[in-house]
Length: 93
Picture (spheres, rainbow, N blue to C red):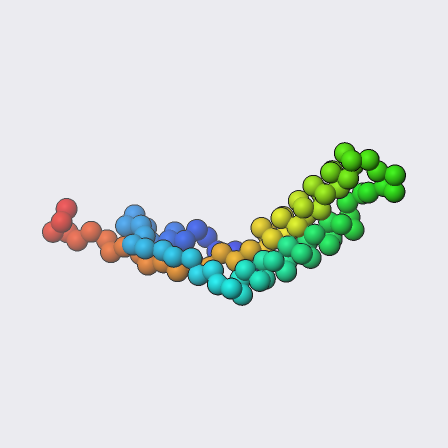
């Protein structure tokens, strides 16, 4: 999947006129699902011993939460609509 450049990079020196996020309910549900899958993978990959104490359990929880957060961040939707500003007219210079 090709990654896009920053919003408005093709606008040139005139810059952006406006921009808005297009995050909707489906994007939120997808992020929650991907984070849950990341948490399951983290739970399987992070080490937890049978005789673990409180500190080891805390480290395990941090490892699982980190995996869930990383997966959600990595695959989060970043859809943005924007419009380029009009370049200045010769009369206004």
